Length: 343
Image 1 (spheres, one colour):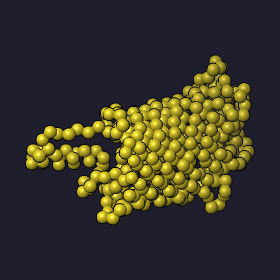
Image 2 (tube, rainbow, N blue to C red):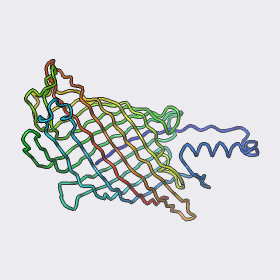
Image 3 (cartoon, rainbow, N blue to C red):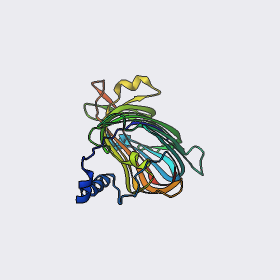
């Protein structure tokens, strides 16, 4: 998977005129504790500094699962083509570089997963992030671009006679996000543009009675659509801290629609049914970073990444008589551990 992230982040601060009085009353310590608890921090380190440079090295056990669910909408189950996808679960090696200077923060992550049994079974990724911090008062705007590629095996079995077909497949994924954090640095709302190409079974349905109208098979389908999203995230802030002891999380949820088209038979495109869709992107874990007496600091992060998208066709198309039905569910997940060295 290749991933590019562009973020614009902003923080606002409030100061009190009489900090000495607040210190005497213990109020400032209470306020500090409350603000850190929002971050998910278990303890308040002696120094809250941000690193100019940090390097992460680790491993991620990646599992990729996809299921075609279009056949579930058929009136007669014997018309189905049962399709399965296979990418072997295995370890990916991860390297990440974070840089920060004044208003600018930059991160680059690379990971690679290759199967020991098949060179055609693989996934790799590049994540690049750019953030502008403390630049626009009271609002944080984040933009992301994601590009992903997967390779694996595909198997299809026709229910009516048991005929089978095996082969390999390659998928491509492109995502663009814009997220606005209007209240704080953790809760955001946004918009996602989504494009995904994958081989899949498809069925032309008679809208009047739901029966198969005579066209079924497997084709490369290109989905395009958009989502409205909500985001809860502290990872961007934790990544640039030199010392931290607590939760790290990044979670987003979206509701939207996807429009499928054939990449090999354009004559069918007018029949495709638009799909309702939902997605979940979650990273949750624990980070421990130590501010050392020497120039370089160190830490460890352990967690779990989970991504899922679910689609459901609407049985409606540009034709009044027929709908070409496609559906899929995809999951991409696994535990991860990173060791950090920062300056």
